[in-house]
Length: 282
Image (cartoon, rainbow, N blue to C red; front, side):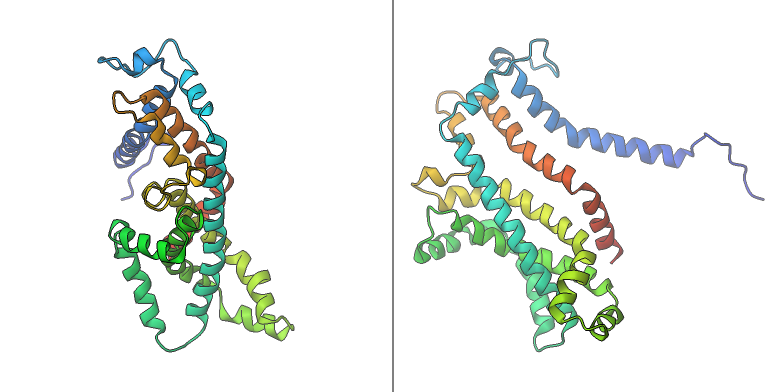
């Protein structure tokens, strides 16, 4: 006998799941809320021994100190240039590589795919010193190229492995039909296959953008003496002082750094959801 379901009344299991989701979202969002709150708090409240989760006298002094910092605009453009270059280059290379390992049969294809997974398992910290000597021998220290190349190398294995599913989901009959209609292989790649795997490219680009934009380890290791090549995470070091840290400036700078990431998320939100859904389905 089928149980009656009253309209408008939710099941206890669904209510529990929604409550757990809201609790998880609150836990995840609370550090962001505290960061923004601390950025707007006056110096006295930030340094208070009795912190409160609100402020009755918001102030822009912390943001003023951030934007008055020398070469802050240059640091922002450097971060934007590095992140954009990594995203575009990794998307193009990953798309071609994923197509190659999916559509073509060649020697050591399985070995290459396994190497992609192995590359993801190596900690970044373990490779920082070897990469430093590599950049030094290549003459790339104190240049933005020393940030672009390592991030490109670390983002490609994940992007290629993820895009394999999207390329494999496109029927081979579609390619055969395109060739019958007179389309070359290059035309099929960029006019037919590329739009179909675009959601996957957006999903991988988000991860590449975030890891590159928030990078501090490589910037601290490879940008030694030329401060004009510094990025935004390096700019936050100005607010760390020996006697007393400027936590208001640190929180304001972190808030400014978060804005481009949020803008990027808003721009690619729809394609990101479909891309992650396709990856899970695969």
